[in-house]
Length: 116
Image 1 (cartoon, rainbow, N blue to C red):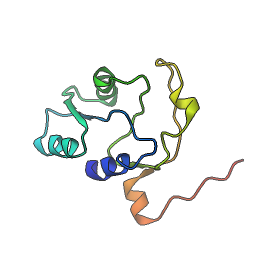
Image 2 (cartoon, one colour; image 1 turned 180 degrees about the horizontal axis):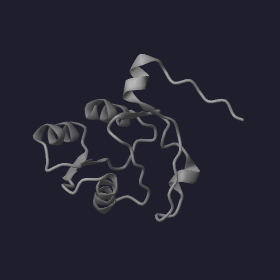
Image 3 (spheres, rainbow, N blue to C red; image 1 turned 30 degrees about the horizontal axis):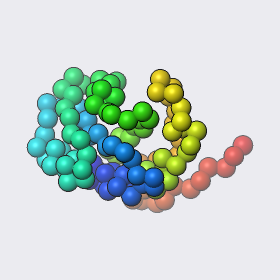
Image 4 (cartoon, rainbow, N blue to C red; image 1 turned 180 degrees about the vertical axis):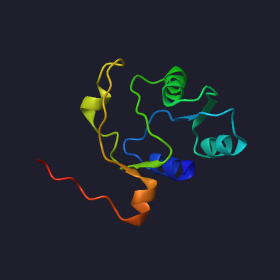
């Protein structure tokens, strides 16, 4: 799943300034290899849990803006192309763009939601 996710990240426009892969385990040589194959910074967070993994990612990140993406998701190519999200203060949290779950994307493409 990580390889497919990073392949999609490699096609983002605009391209991310930095990609950090946080391995939320004691570490894995295959995960490290895939991350490096895509030019991503690989780090390990052995303390289990999403909040620990994201905090490790924040600590490793060198950019002002940060976007989180799980390895089982595929972002749209323009996922990062939202000026309001990118200009938010560092301590602000935002989410934008459409992200597809790999399993559901393989079965049938997600349909845009109707505005209500």
